[in-house]
Image 1 (tube, rainbow, N blue to C red):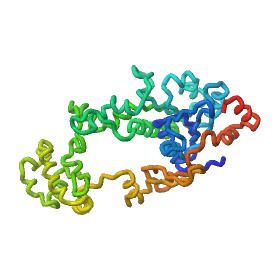
Image 2: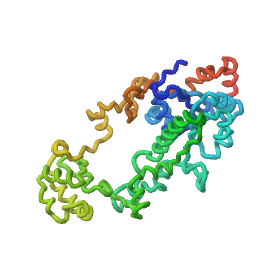
Image 3: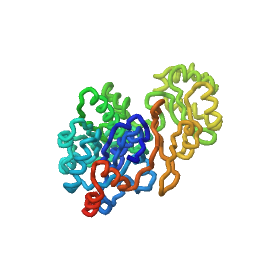
Image 4: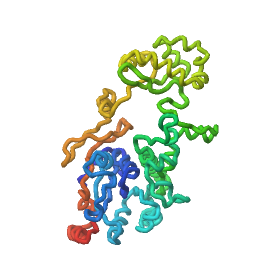
Length: 396
């Protein structure tokens, strides 16, 4: 095999990736970046020319599918399904994000695949779950953001619902699915059997609400929009400066004291309106006004330097170009270089997790459609004649 794993960590695992768009590819990317041999299965050219996930040479697609191999395979034809089932015999993981009924119609559902290989870990991502009243509904990130409560707590008070600027439900469902797959692979070392791992956009979105969801479940408190102010840690929010805005998080007794001392606001410590957490929460608007009158007298850089020196969390509000120009971001290596034979030298977003002995890497750019079809099929015993026949019949 000419494929070089991106890491040693998961290099012993083979993954069959049937996913499209974002949530599923995100799950597969997590495994590929840690060295799993992820074979991205796509419809042959001419059978599917849609840009699900964006143009192939666009930033989104290139970021989602690095470190994978690409095999074209028509699962709507019996011979295509037969090839897939042959691959399943030696695979460790299958990941799919079809609507729940589609995999049964194709004959590649979990029970069917498990009958071929009881060790298979089968990851499914859906919009709303594999069963239940919304089972057949198509899933989309913004729909999950709304149904999952996120849009009701995002934005300025009274503004109306606001979506988050990234597909958080898609990304969450993909990352949770990858985590479930890794747990299932660990458990397989004990039981010798795989299992069905399921995540959904709706479930992921609700899980990511975290303390906001817990406020309702435990205290029956319905959170509302708080804008740039943290809903419970006060003062935490966006404050004006002489040349822009910065974030300041000065909540809690000790940090608030350091904050007041550094900005000559010691009188706030004795003011009954602001003297403790409960008072500051009740009088948030008045407190923010007092702080803003002081912060707008200095530049962003001056305030950030002053407050960090005093141990008060703060930071700039960066545009995307500023993010990747930041020296700490450069130090973390969050822009990972890779060479693409068509696009040349490009950068993709690196993993946020570091391992000391078996780090992840970006060993390969996103492949062209079907780039590894012959290579993969020959690994499973198909010769040139069989592959030519498959191509002629649009099986691959």
